[in-house]
Length: 435
Image (cartoon, rainbow, N blue to C red; front, side, top):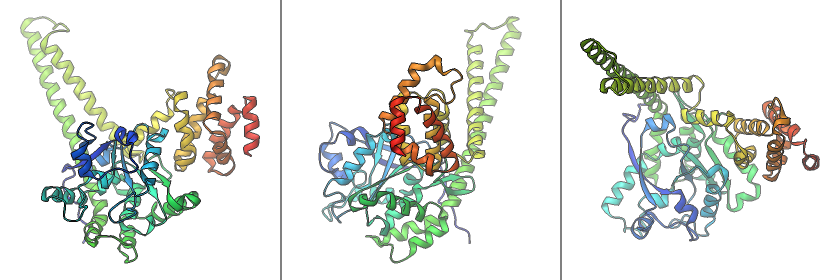
C-alpha cells in the first residue's frame, strides 16, 4: 500500500522561535533552555510564535528569514557545555550569509525541556510532543545550519535533519537540492571535525544529498543509527515514507487555492464592472476617478492582476524546478541592482555554497567587476572600487580555485571575474600568488 500523506497541508503547527538579534547579542557562553528564556527574559521578549504549514514549505515562505539549527547534544542534559555551538551559530548569523535571518529555531531553546527530569509541566509536555511530531517541516521549509561534529553522523535526529535540509519540494515529491538553485543548507564543522572540515562536509553531503525517501528510511531504520528516545525514531520513520505524498498533496492544495482565489477575484471584478456600468448608464455620464464605484472597480481589477501573477509565478517556479522563494533569490542575484555591499556575501558563497550557488556567485562578481559593461570607461571609478572590494573580501583565492578545478560553468564565470580583477595591478600580484 502506498504511503499516505500526513493530512491537509493547510493544517499548521505553531513553533516557538528566537529572535535572531537576541542570539547575535546574547552575552552568555551557551543558550539557556526554553523555560528559562520564556520565564526570565521577559523584558527582551526573545521568543516569537510562528505558524508553519506544508503550504509554507512548498512556497518557501520562511527560507529567507528563518534558520533551523541541526546539532548534536554533547551531553544528555546540556547540548553545548563549552559554548562552541553558540559561537558557531553567532558566527553564521553575523556572516553575510546569515544577515537576513530574523528568527532562529534550535530545539533546546525553542521547545520545553525536561531538565531536571520530571520538572516539565503537563502543558509544556503536550506542547513539546506537538512540536516534535511536526519538526520535519522546519528542516524542509527554512534555511538550515548544520553544526557538524564527529558524532553527528551516528545519530538519528541529526542525520534525518541533514537529509531534509538537502531536499526541496516539487509536485512530484522530494528532489535533491544540492547543486541546484534550491540549496538552503550551510555546514559549519565544530570540535574535532573542524580539523578536516572540507572532508567531513563532503562526506555528509555525499551520504545524504541524493537519497530518496525510501533510501533515507532504510538507512535511518538501521540499529547503528542511534537515538536517545526510541519513541522519537518510531514516530518519525513512517513520516519519511509519506513525505513524497505529503508534499504532492501540498502542491495540489496550493494550486487549487490559487485557482479559487483567481476565480473569486474575477467574480468580484465582474460585479464591480457591472455596477459601474449600470451607474454610468443610469446617470448618462462617465464616472470620475474618485467615484466610489470607479474606485471599487479599479481595486477589484488590481486584485485580479495580483491573483493572476501569483498563479503565474507558482507555475513558473514549478516549470523551472525551483522553489518560489529560491527563484526570487536567484533572480535577485542576476539583477543589476546588486551593489558593492553584496560583495562579502557573494565571496562567501564561492566557498560555502553548492556547485550552482558557487557558479551564480562567480557570475555575479564578474558582472559587478565589469565583465558585462559595454562601456567600462564610463564606470571606471566604480568598477575599480568593486574590484578592490572583491580582493579585500578574500575573493581572489576562491575564484582561482574555481577557475582551476570547478565545474565547466564555474570555470567560465570565475575566469571572467578574474579577467576583470586583473585590471588592477595589485590584484594581478594576488592572482599570481593564488595560482
